[in-house]
Image (cartoon, rainbow, N blue to C red; front, side, top):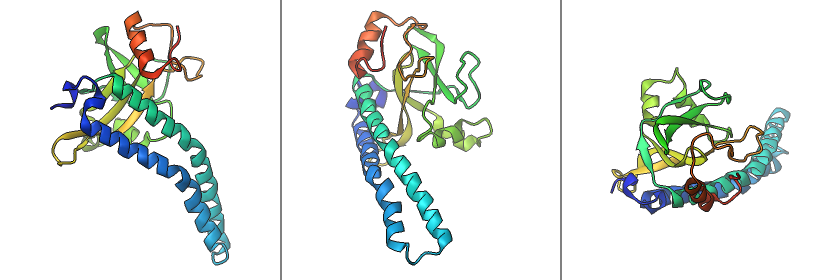
Amino acid sequence: MHPSTYPTAWGHPPTRRAWARQTTISVLAFPAWILVPGGLLFALIDSLPSALVAVFAIATIYGAYRACVQPLLIFLNFRTRRILRAYPWHLGDTPFSRSPHPESSNTKPWLAFPNPAKPEEYIPMHFHLHYHTVWWERRMSERAKPERKAQLAPVWFAGDPRFFGVIAVTGSGEDGTSPAPKRLHFLAQISPDKKGAAIDDNPWHASPEDYSRARQAVGKALLHD
């Protein structure tokens, strides 16, 4: 079955496997960011020249910083799962750019998805976190080679662009032929105060039923009205 024919994205078996694989990597990366550079520095500090000791020390500091960030990424993986359990996949050609969107004050890279209430209207969604976005941004650049941009056709989307969503691109399933998502990434509309709450002034005609469905998906943490 095509991924978009399932009632929810989570009903698509390759999606569940892709999420489990990505989450496992995120969890294992948490101790690795501290133990690997720090352990190497401790084990080799007596035999390394001063210049390399400084390099390993910087790597250890960076690893500690990434270890502090990793719980957020793990948390977002579980929020991603909640969205996948509530919304189906939609696959299609998606407008995108690294240049500022003409109708948005946000200057970060964006992708745009149809408004469920007005399909002819496209709603931009921006990258607000810079973690795990380099792969996407390189392919969204106006100077990207055609073969790189082609990797974003189609973009997978599950969610409601008025609030939040999960994006992905096409990978190969376990049989090597059936489509499976990869590079799952959480996106959310952010309020002007940058506190991480989804916008609540309802400029895109979201109905009470839309809000109710969104709250059931992620709780009240991202929604208030």
